[in-house]
Length: 125
Length: 125
DNA sequence: TATTGACTTGGAGTTGACTCCAGGGAGTAT
DNA sequence: ATACTCCCTGGAGTCAACTCCAAGTCAATA
Image 1 (cartoon, rainbow over the protein chains, first blue to last red):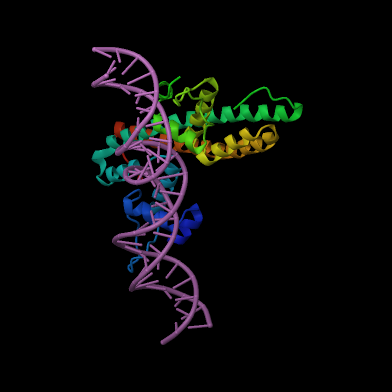
Image 2: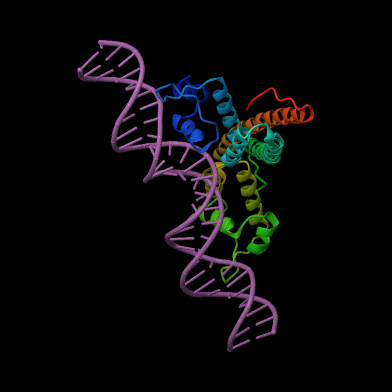
């Protein structure tokens, strides 16, 4: 799979994909003999993973750390699990904040709808 | 309430509070006659709101727009509701992505726990 | 009244995560 | 074999959102 196909499939730019590889958010991608990236199944799994984690705000730093540990082999299993658990704490916290904000937004919007129907606005902010 | 007290209460820096005010994420804060910020109930409501929205990744730009509309008065009620609905779409989308990432993390972590118990690792990434 | 510590401003600097670009190679269609 | 479109690299540039700083003011205490 060429870089372009991956871009289209995941709606991400080629620059970002190359950047991820360069800094180590994903391991080095398979290449053709002339040096062109040829994303195999495994490479794509890493790309998918990176996109998923980044979409939840997991810092690039942590993804790099994970890949590094992964490449060190089975002796880092526990360290990887610990890292994932640390990531999870952060994501869970953010998830709660997003939910709280959703609640607040729903409340505010309903007040606005009310105000628009009745013409009454008994509040601020 | 002094800026320091607000900082401590919301675990935010004074620089950030001043920045929010400067760019218009919150309206101008009440001052003492000598020009020192004295956060009143209403000011604090705005601060709380800003922190909540920012914690869900709502762009500063949108908060500024909201405050601007608010200050234009009742004629902008509908515009404000529309803005909030636009914000809600973004937050909802992010909320889903966070949930998806949580699921993935839980799955990965459980696989690691499994591997640590059994010593078997039949997977990658 | 002198020091201390918190407050003020405007502007410059930092950070994380991309995003763009110049200069050059490669593979296919005409 | 020329054009066209894609690909490559290393490095510089951009952007949002802070974060820091210098230089000065203010208020409470020794």
